[in-house]
Amino acid sequence: MKDRISALVFIALGIFFLAGALRMPRITEYGKYGAPGIVPAFFSIMVILLCFIMFVRKQRPSSENSSASVEVKRTENRRLLLASAMFLVYVFLLGKINFVVLTSIFLSVTSMVFLRKRLVLTAVISVAITVGIYYLFSRVFLLPLP
Image 1 (tube, rainbow, N blue to C red):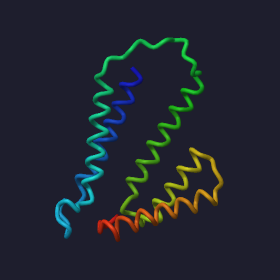
Image 2 (cartoon, rainbow, N blue to C red):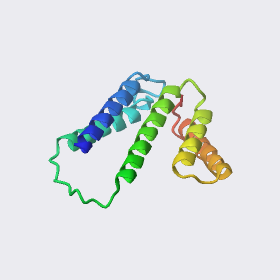
Image 3 (cartoon, rainbow, N blue to C red):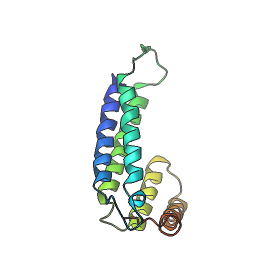
Image 4 (cartoon, rainbow, N blue to C red):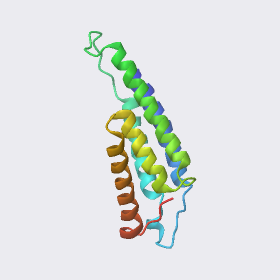
């Protein structure tokens, strides 16, 4: 039952991201294959398909004597909901805030929340990764980022 609920939640998220990807320009000066929504649309469709498979598959009976405690399950559910909310906020703000600034903040906050590593090191790595992604897409692939 819990797999089905998770599948439905992620199908809804996949549809949300797919709708956002389909609103992006379809034809750019680089042609239709340079459209920025192609990759997000592809990944959204894959999430939807995989979650649909998870939804319709037959469930094996689970043992009640599972080694994971109820508290661990609650913690993991909270982390899942927090991660989903963070991704939704990121996607909502994408295009409204500069890509390098938003992505650097997103990667830093995500790392601090889930990894709890050193703040300065996490911030430096997040900025470096974001600048690398920006350079790769804008200079190598010649694809504009929001």
